[in-house]
Image (cartoon, helix red, strand yellow):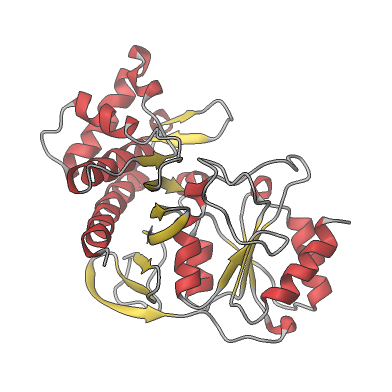
Length: 328
């Protein structure tokens, strides 16, 4: 089940990872623009989305796509040089692709997320980390009737655990009802992964966002103190945090509501792939009050506030600690 969809997703993410790596090695300021919310978007975001959307359209033409980016800025004549850079990178993966086809592939991701079955894509999750040369992820998931059916995470700067090759990232994937797996970005054999077995809160390792605007670092510190956690938190960008929990390298990932934006709701593409991979690896993912994540409300998770991902053994105690801090 889902063999075709999984194969398509893994190969599309693999191609996009290669494109992103090439851009990251040569990124210049002219290849980055600011969106209205002041978040950055690079030629790699656009190129990755074009490559993956084109692959999905070809292999699964009846399934709509909910993706983070659109091509409005690239269609602006003032940004023709940016479009030329995007097109150049895309053609290294899909030769002879016309500019118009690249724009249309990017814009194929504008679905509102209300279909019974759809793909959701973050072409680069953690763009600020990408720009600074740190961790980022290419995240793709298939949603069916509000449930995540499969998820694929490409992490070009995160080595396999244990490392199989130097300077090569990893791809993690899962299908609902099956286990979670990891393989080298270069391909080869996959290995099953699982969350850690830590049961005592004081032995936990937390991971959280580098960007303080994405979560509340002070609240995380308060929660860690309540739980008696002695280990310092691991901070890294993107859904690579889900990867660390799924591989047993961290026991908890928290994305807490920011005091600056208490009503902010998470975007589905920022979490769907990582959520399923942690669940398939034996973990639990909920919102801050322990409720199941709801993917039936369109592009945003309107019914959920924040994220708590754990190894399952400690989930109840972590949620209790989170609630005591968030509600205070």
